[in-house]
Length: 514
Image 1 (cartoon, rainbow, N blue to C red):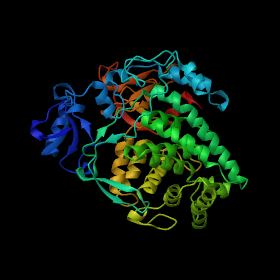
Image 2 (image 1 turned 120 degrees about the vertical axis):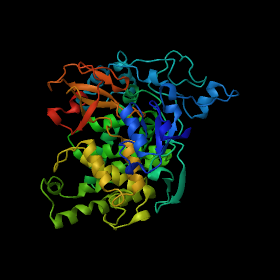
Image 3 (image 1 turned 180 degrees about the vertical axis):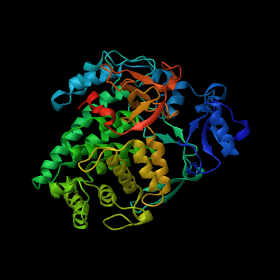
Image 4 (image 1 turned 180 degrees about the horizontal axis):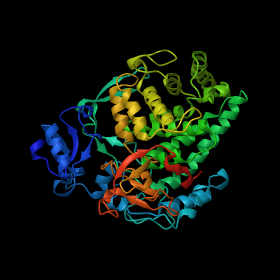
């Protein structure tokens, strides 16, 4: 899949998947990038003596298809990959995204979520369906669909990670989960093969929306049970989380969009769903199986349930906590374990994650001040996502930070609070412009990211919310930066910077399900 190329032999259009040095010792922001112009090519030649190039992710004359076995039929090759393959250009055809969101908002009025079939009916006029590129039913890949087939419910994808083909060494953490550590590239994702989403983000949003609504309702019910000293019903929540795991496998952008932008009036519910989505996406990115990803999702939703036993005044305090108040806050971990342990459906692995998600690799965490491998990979994933999600969402005691600021804060804990390899992989997984991020374009317009481009990470698909004069667009349109469409000035559209939520008075959730 990859080949070594001397720096002087590089050319525009090649996709660099690995350097001859650790990524964090290089000036490149992304671990894996496409050489798109001469300045970037010159910079690579200046920094590196040789690099590894992935021809199948390159463009132009540098592109090369994978060798095909003449004995394998196309259907057999697709089945061997674990899922059908959607042509890149077909998957990114434009859809009236704003009209779709408006239809979803209409179907979810009064904070209720429409049934899946009803939601599919409501959004039918805006959802473009391409029978030639959607997953086929048992008859084979790429077949025409029988009458009445709903493209909204694709075949169950295999349990493959969002990234596959990593060369690993294994060692077991204290939680019993084998830890995967890339050998090459100083912790970078050497040799990764990115698994493209199985369905478009628009299609998966329709499937994931009822799941998010059910999860939020169950979290509210669990909170009521805890406040009444009743054992929470975790089995129903596990069923929803298991369906969310499948949604992440089909297209992780959809769940991330819903988790980031579908807000309630309860920060704790929003944060819990946000963390759950991130840990599932990150866990699958690392190649964890469905059961492990579901366990992470459950822990992410419930790891702060013990805060229900703390004084409300303490949780909503806007100033700095006193040492005594901080000690009280730390007790929420013990309360969470007490609440969850009383349920017969709480697994030991889930309790381990909940009990250790505030531990840090350097021993600075709590409640046990564990160090290194004693924390465990699963708990480290939960803790890292908890930190990132808390920073990027407005809290009672602090403003929301931009994704770039939050990622910088996470990187600052590389090798201290969190292991170097885990931080490196998280930065690569989440990207510079995650779904739901407000960004400012070089035209002065303000947009929200609606879908990632997993090869050209700096060129996501966006929805334009404000014009160059920072006035709202009455009917926001989407723009795919992948295609280098020229702006009014003649220069291609490009992202200048990420913005914190609320910048220029914009709340992206207003364009979704406030």
